[in-house]
Image (tube, rainbow, N blue to C red; front, side, top):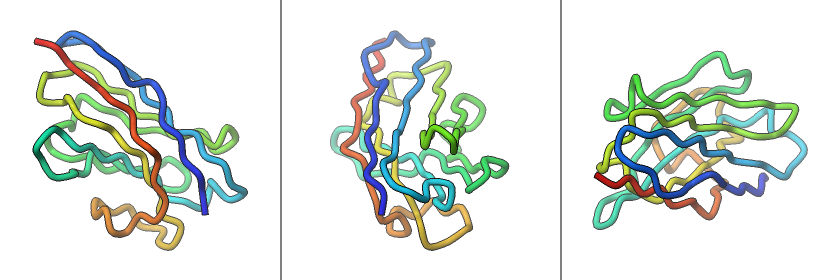
Length: 125
């Protein structure tokens, strides 16, 4: 089990950038697939991106593909979400999550067992 904590959210103008961090407490961070999800006001939670154990494989949702980059540093037990060319529709609470059972990347929230508390990202037009 991992304890996750996100940081790096904030208010940014459209076209700007932010980098979110997800720091984990736990022994085996390198054995977890790490995912990023978001929930916009009035909308369902949606998948954003995920990265495999070694950081060599990643998957993105269509709305963020080409603008967001997910990465991880296993030595620092931290996952990152670099967000560029931000749009007002990216406004949401962003959550990181960890899947310690499967080695395969999944966009399904139910596959992830451990979740952070979320960090707010607001993009102004």
